[in-house]
Image 1 (cartoon, rainbow, N blue to C red):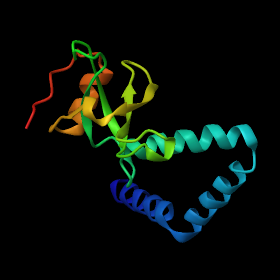
Image 2 (cartoon, rainbow, N blue to C red):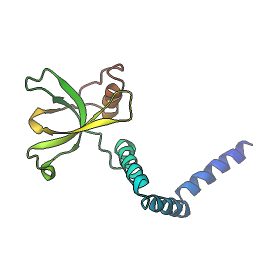
Image 3 (cartoon, rainbow, N blue to C red):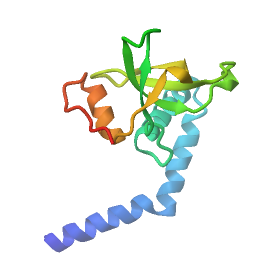
Length: 141
C-alpha cells in the first residue's frame, strides 16, 4: 500500500509537470481568454496571485506612505511600479495597499517623497497588514 501510494504520487507529479499536461492547461487558458468577462476576471486574478507567489513577485518592496502632509497618518503597502511616468505622474511610484481580512486592496499613485521603504521580510509585513495589525510587528532590518 505504501509503495503504491509513493508510485501514484510520483506519477501524478510527473503528469502535472509533463509537456502533455502543460499543453492541455495552455489550451484551457487560451479558451478562457476568448470569453470577455471571464478573461477580465481570470487574467486579473492570475496576475494578482502571481504577484504573491509567482516568479514575478511584486509584493517584495514593503513601504510606509505618509497619507497626510504632516505624516501623522500613514499607510502600509507595497511598491508595485517604481515609476508612474506612463500615467503622467512624474517622480511618483505605484503603491498597492492590501486590505485587512480581505482579498482586496487599493492602488494609488503616490509621490516618491512620501514613501519610506521598510527593510523587512515581505511575507511578515503582509501578514501584519492583512491581519489588521493583530499579528506580531515585523522585525525591521
